[in-house]
Image (spheres, rainbow, N blue to C red):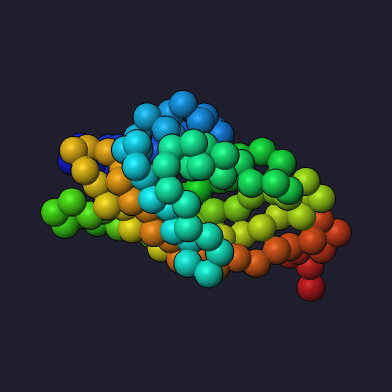
Length: 126
């Protein structure tokens, strides 16, 4: 596995644990994070402040569907879920672009689709 892919894996592992230090260690100081249709931020402090958004209870569960790399760009398709503080579960499907610089993430661009399942919704019944 390349250094860039290892960095992205380490970064994702940090998100799975809400480990701010681990996440931030994978980023350049001038990191840019764009979630299309939601927000754009710049810098490690702004990134740190956004790691755990309000309304969530615990870290997300993230699974890498596939990860590819070309030059200084790593692209990852992810699925996951996170529990909201209401008990509802938000399911996510993400397409992530990581622009790398000297083995660190300099830019993250994300397209995310979500759906929420109510904590009172019963699944698997006929």
